[in-house]
Length: 105
Image 1 (tube, one colour):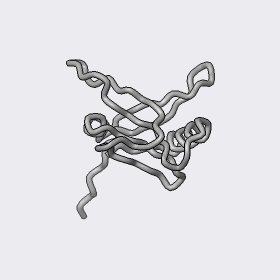
Image 2: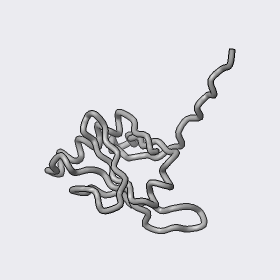
Image 3: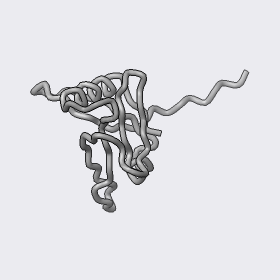
């Protein structure tokens, strides 16, 4: 399942508040096109999830809606936010860190 950093959750909450969205609003990922090199994702603000969307939420109230193909593509990823040289915030999708197997004693 897609994980979300605290920074990404804060950015999503700020975006939905800026857009005048209510508590149901969130950030929506959808697959725009599927190519040999991978999936092209479309990111948009949505007033609510669409039928079939997977809904992720945080305690802080940030919501992410994943269209089924996008949910499959992002299953092992982490959503983060990064600042560029001009101070603009950009969402970034990265692989989840490998979990160390438990040590057997």
